[in-house]
Length: 440
Image 1 (cartoon, rainbow, N blue to C red):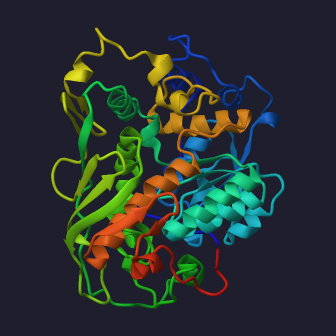
Image 2 (cartoon, rainbow, N blue to C red):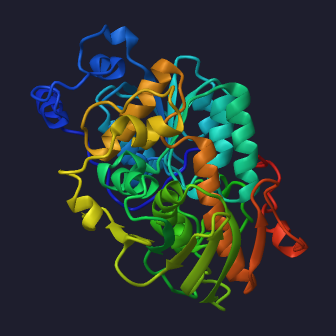
Image 3 (cartoon, rainbow, N blue to C red):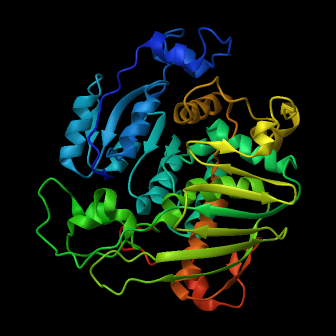
């Protein structure tokens, strides 16, 4: 079932070996070149290069499929939109096989690795099916549509022993990782609060239904979600503003920023509260608007999540503050790093959390580095930097914040049992009814 994401046009990758290696720092910086990277640039036999199947090839699905080409060969593509599928097939010089049904791609024994860049409501089922088919996987964030999906997924990955990298790539970005390391190292004193700004959810509607375009398999696109007439605004990029398929900015940007915040907080949430406006339109975007949430952690730290302000994360401690986003990393502890560097053997979080894991490969652009980390871990069979357990915990925080907003009341959360305390209605929202034939 080949799923499509967004409206960004596919662009073929155009990076030669020398320029990529130079950008990575490998020609001049003396960095270790991992086995997967050496495969990608001809140091090993082409027969050793991993064979990749790409599912979902619009917008970010295209990005991750192209990034995977540094480390292997895309030999199959899959999307429910025929136009997207044919464009993807033409974009890859290897002329890959093209499928409408992702199960046909997974059934191929000659595919080693799968990338999943579909709308959010498909991530968990496809990822579980890929693991059970013996594939290692790069799956776009947010990892799940519900909390219960994450619990099932963690069990399957553990049982199958597959390597799964989630696309929360800010963990592979030096700015965000340094911010988390500085907080964990106590450079701002005891952490008191975190402010996360995600941006506004879109509003709109009512939207009219229309005949389903002949090039889209709408039934397959909907998957586990309720069967409804085709509405153009439900598909491609704008799916994220519908509760049926996603969770708005709380899961979209939240899967990035809340993940980094929680990495630094180093604790689990126990209480959720907040306020928002809920759209009343029955045939329009239906995620919360004008929202603000507060999450309290077991260690006493409070995290505020807003839709207004400067996009990024502000850490406030008893002795200072640090701000980080995709453009900057600021604060006195950052300025002091040159004269007072962190002891890397202690505070490099990827190794600090899991000492058996390999170092990240070289100084690549973050998202390439993130993909490279997957292929390094496929080689070593270690868990990657954005493993399913950490990402299940991060996106569960996003889901629970959304549930609190939708119910309009606080939630008490048991992070060990993963249930809401004394709230049967909230617990019913930890899962969703799945359409017959598409159950996980």
